[in-house]
Length: 374
Image 1: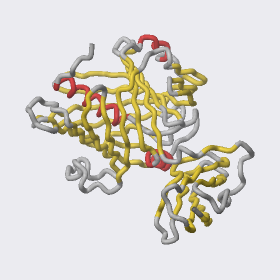
Image 2 (image 1 turned 90 degrees about the vertical axis):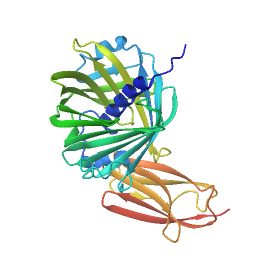
Image 3 (image 1 turned 90 degrees about the horizontal axis):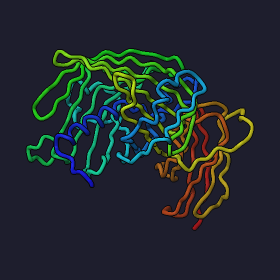
Image 4 (image 1 turned 45 degrees about the vertical axis):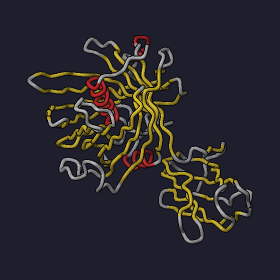
């Protein structure tokens, strides 16, 4: 029997969701590699969709708690998951009109991540604007604004808002990130909702304590495991929560939460998709130089393949322009390892003519022409 969530239940659920969104690094990482601030930002810029899955019965995952160190297999497939989050992601660098932009605690952020999503069985529109920075030494959160068409406080209003701010900003990820990386972040979290304000003194202690292979119903990939211990003090008491986060190179991540006795209480995994999903690597030797090949076939109608090579891991951007210099489509905009790649460009809705395609890889830029004949 389907249960109808009360406004109070929805409020708790939405606050928990906001906390999860704040912890999402949206990063990609191979075991024991170093992940820099530029790589994190490049990966976030290319992410467009996010799907979340949770389980109400996570006891079968208990063995994963003690699996620290290297060469581990973190298998989540023994639990049954249901999709509880579906949405889109957009990175904003200009946000003067974004909710919360006039708040002094948020105005110093470098970017805003805008999440539009549906949660569980609640057919409503919800948006979270997360204010953050990408620095050389880490990812920092200034806070977020959450709005939903759910009447969270039960006052009959059509839309409610929750605002979380951090002073000073809250470090959610240390960079460069690799096995053994650790950090501590102390801040005051302020929650504003329905005319009330609650201050929580918060301390996060985190360490990358394991690496190996993450296996979920969505697939498997190399991962790093981060152990997070969060202490929150409010109203004279202190609450300690422990969680484990698993980060992969595919946009898939996972989380485990445990209670004071170390027993797993909940689990989730998330998949993310972004631009350039039609790009595939080509097996072969590592290239010596950046190279952008002529598209094939050329002329084409309506689809063609663009091949390019990068000699080392770098941020790659491959875009198509018309002869007036207007951007037509971005095929790739992400961090990629060294290798040879093929990208597919489909021009179904474009008129015949000459188009330019440009590859930006690190400090190198190369441009070629192609002809569309219909």
